[in-house]
Length: 290
Image (cartoon, rainbow, N blue to C red; front, side):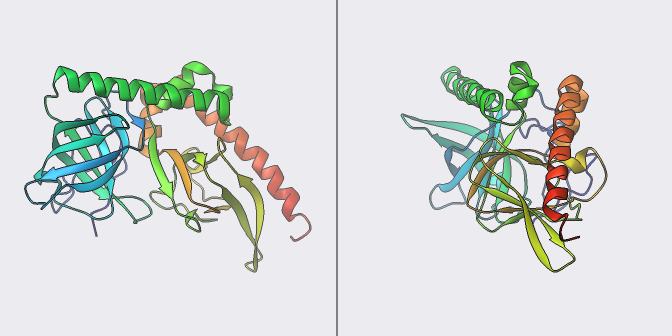
């Protein structure tokens, strides 16, 4: 098992591209230093090949976020991230091979995948052009999704652009529990925005049966209330189908509140509104069973 982040105050907070501020947490593992973001990072899912002298051939991976200075990639198992020298981004019409340095590695909250942070090493002008196009195009698409098709559209276009620059892509399998009622566990406090799939919110009544209180689809938002109040969740969230989502985790939310306080304030208010509306729905669903 990979070493988990030990300290949230020093932990996985910023862009995996900058190595200054990284703290070694044992066994050669480093925390994800997103607290010191300098470049926009957008959640995106792009197939990748990892090249290392320790591999007989390229190792398959997929991006989870991307900036012009590096990327976070997901693999099925851990590997020696310090041995990685290059990656190839497999785009629909071309491929881009970029020199990289491995910065950190840790397990995804579900424990099913391993995340690795890579810093791009002196990309050429042509490579930078491709990276900028990818980041800007992906950010534009995400901003439009937030503004036109999500429950966060009330934030406005400017804030939608800001949110697009702090997301990380994530996939969840059908039947997987994202968080449990009454719990407040590390890695389960993210704000989640559904891209595709269905998530069911349910409550356990009298420790006897689960009552569904909401069925969420593309554009719906859930989770994150523990970022505003140090309490456990009032419901459980379970993937009804395979789900693709964007997440804003606790360190990233802390970054937003520090670097973009107005966005952090408005995002917090939107989460509270959604929570209150769901609470009323919860009371309506469980009134006859309490």
